[in-house]
Length: 170
Image (cartoon, rainbow, N blue to C red; front, top):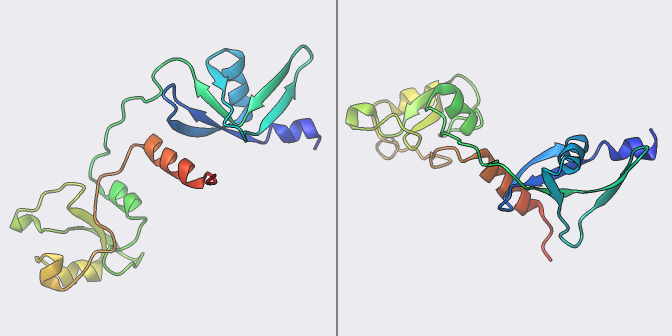
C-alpha cells in the first residue's frame, strides 16, 4: 500500500457548527465536505494534518472538521421502552445478578404497585431474578440494581462524552 493510499484509511472527527463532536467519518467523506465548502478544517494546536493530492489540487485535511451549514443536530426522539431498547441500554445483562442468560424485562416498582412502563422503571432481568423478585420492590426482595435505570441519551451527546474523555489532558 502506498503512502497516499494509507492516508485514505484515516478517520476524521466531525464537529457541528456549535463545536459539538458528532461522529467519526472516513477521510474520503471529509474531503467531499471540505471541497464542497460544507465544512472547514479545525486546528486545536496538536491536530494531525494529512496531505491529499489529486492531479490538479493538493488538499490539507485535518483530523477535525466543523460543519458550516445546516442543522446537524437533527430531531432525535427517545426510543420507545421496549425489550430490544432496554436490553441494548443494559448491555444484555441482568441488572440484579449480571447474567446474560434468559433475559426478561422487570418493572423495578411493580405495575401492580403503581410502577409505570418508563425508562426509569424498566430493567433487564434474568428469569430467576425476575421470579425471585416477584411482585415486590428490589428493597422488599433484598436485591440491588447494578445501575440505576435511565433513558438513553442522544447519540451525539454520547459520542461527544466519549470523544472528550479520550482526549489527552494538557
